Image 1 (cartoon, rainbow, N blue to C red):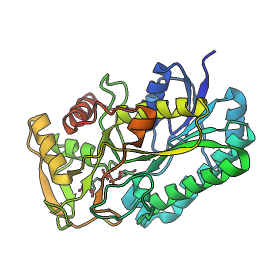
Image 2: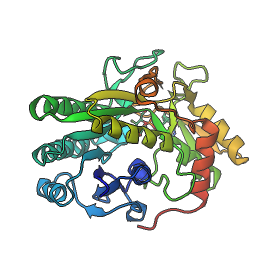
Image 3: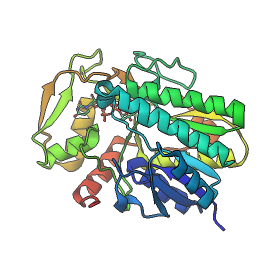
Length: 328
Ligand code: UFG
């Protein structure tokens, strides 16, 4: 029988792509999701269990029902700007919810844990390429909440033998090239889908959040990675754990940074349409520059992010954008 993997947030953007990759790799992804930001239509690759991480008894039930060999934990609130105005929600949902999940997994004897962390844990370290040993100095509640969960996992490694692969994501973009799943947030806050909505007339324009940063064109620089490459790393991370190779942290970025203006210009070229835009003030919590300086995932996991060119990410996102979205 194929092994089950519990995927929290499996109805969300990255989680749904991970479920597809897990199924292709011979696992049965069990989605656990409260559908607050996820979509039932995105659960296509394995069983669905609706539930909330704040309900520990529900988690225990699901562990007992499926006896998963591992957890992949995507479920989280993940908007940097919102985390600055509503920090309580971020600490409660992300940290308390994850603590419940980690405890429930340990109590069920499920000791392999793949965790979606973020480069937002590094914070503001201008002109530095970030590797896994860089200092962690988050400047927003989102990054702080993810950093706290990394520490909880470390503690449970000591107390319960929990083995974890922690992935610190850079900026995820793109969509499944086969069009089965894609990015759909309500409200949308991420740069690439917002640009596509502006191009398509679904919003008046893109507002560039800050044009006075200390970068060549004055806008923030990020390291963009294709969602399919990102989830491939998760399958490699799962195998790493199942092979008993132990706890490890990996950055998932390509090492190349693009400014907001560069992403906007590339989107105009790929779609062959003008991008309406305006300049706006800085958004609270944004770092100037976040670019990975690590090759650890390539060297140790054998990860090769072959789809992560700006053109391919935008083209796949555009195809998904034009094909419609989830209903529920
Ligand atoms: N941006 C704009 N206008 C917009 C939206 C975004 O100028 O309407 C800019 C932002 O200021 C930022 C860049 O585009 O400079 C990227 O912003 P996103 O909101 O797309 O992504 P973030 O960098 O804020 O955060 C994302 C995820 C986090 C993840 C982080 C890692 O939301 O979960 O990437 O950098 F941790």
